[in-house]
Length: 255
Image 1: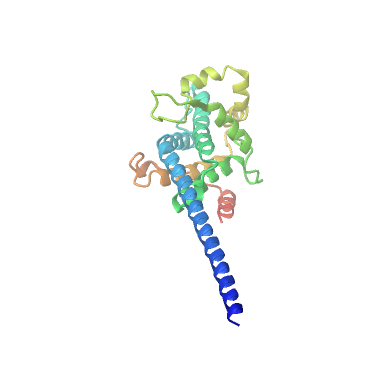
Image 2: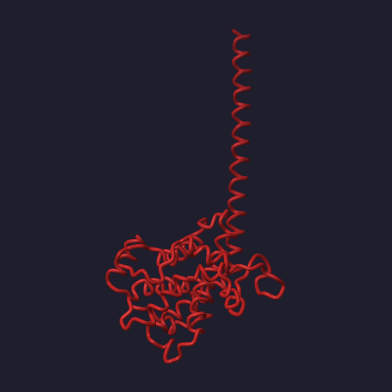
């Protein structure tokens, strides 16, 4: 009986030691996973912080252009190529910064905190406003997701010491953009936007349904990135009125 008891005690000790070793291994693995997740999340937040300024500026310029076109304060009597080219540019500039952020954080845990989760949702809605195919939305200014990304990629250039972004990428400036428009491989991605601009100029009662959603989504993004109205005052954050069916669609997709 004594020998049997000793064997049982020995076996129990070995089993307990194995379980303790497994527990320690699981605990170490869990700590490593949490540490890696925190590291990725910190890197994602650092990337967002680095590009916050150019992104909010690009969003502001785009929504302001849409709003001014809608109110008739942009075109006026001047029909120079600048009006079309620069409007193409503010679309491309936003998509460029959007693609830069997407590429730099695509392997990071962007949704790890409430703040970055909300940012991802705001960016996604801007994408939806340009790409959604619902029948309540006009075809003008519709860009498929792949087209948005392609334009963004065309706008990307390596950052250098003369830019405010010390690492990563930057967007083409307006002068470089206009020069690139002369190249067919670059200009082809802007045919839809150019046709949409011609539509606005040639139609007395254009359908602003898609643009109204896009402009409101951009204002929401700006409110998130500049909540204290340091860069852009609250009284200038005017919103276009969305048609009822567009507002219903937006609310439906937001739920």
